Image (cartoon, rainbow, N blue to C red; front, side, top):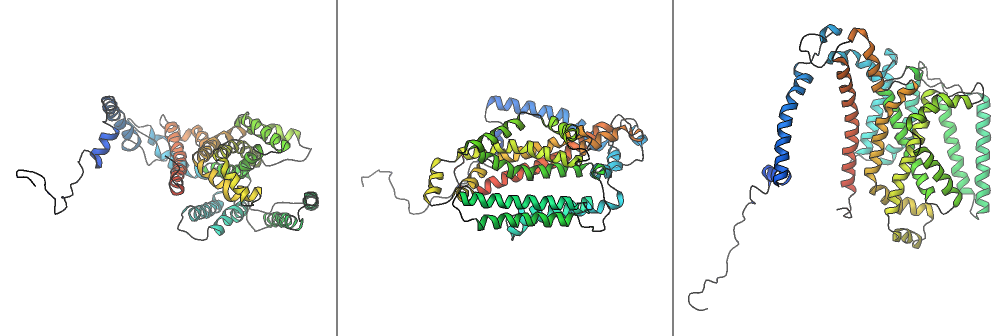
Length: 433
């Protein structure tokens, strides 16, 4: 090495330096998201000034100057009074249960507890026995909830049972003939359909049994109870129907594809408020004399069919996003159409469209307020109805009621949104950017 050279060999590692404070932590986040350019800096400053101007009066009206205790409107008409939370406290029972009998509300509470426990067990990955949990949520809970909320003891005549038995026999015969014409062994499909018919018969027998509970008509239901019943039934029913419609629209059978397209485009082209009006007012005019359905049941059927059309398009988008090679791989493995769909195609397609599915669920949850048009008082409807109570008429009562209803809707919708984000991250396999 020539004299005067500055070259050297390091004999020990260089000390580890911490990253610059402007690149990490709170300062780094602020710099990257709020002050990364002149334009963003100006908008951030303007936003801070706007919040400083708007937030303090809102907080003062909602909490500091609010009225929390009172027996009537006199407590909320004092000078500089804020939100009338005493109104919400006094009417809270109606907001939750509607006109459901006071001494029977324990049945609604028990139904809610069972639902929360089932959903928690299904949503938390660490909880075992997922199949049993889903069996409880999809089979046991609907029957148990129906008996608890209505009282059971549904009057099913002998003519109904004879008609049901005849329908089941015809269905079994159709399956048997179709299997023979297709060259398939009919024993398995006939057995499965027979078990399904027996399961339905068992469910009908349970709901027609007298458990000694006081019958509560659906006309007495209201508030959050109606909102959750309409939303949950619509979500649970529309999901499988939407999947079937999406598969039908992509079917190579012209009749199946045509029926699916007509169904989807018809229900997507009709406003939900029209569907509810038709189900409540017009449908009874087309039924035979003496034949009628419960108003809430008609609304549930209309909402489920309406939501299933939108769900079908969301699922179809996921099916189109799956590469053709996945279909070819399923065929190469010797899987049947339904095996390939159930094991390979649908799991990937549904994972891709989780945001669209949850968005449809959230929209359906908020659209439950439209049942007010047919005389069913959901949460928003029962809140609005109580504005007419002269004992609580004050300038701040309507705003307080609407804020309370909006907050309840926000809790449910935000929870669905956050859980969908969690599921997306959990199911992420590196294909998303």
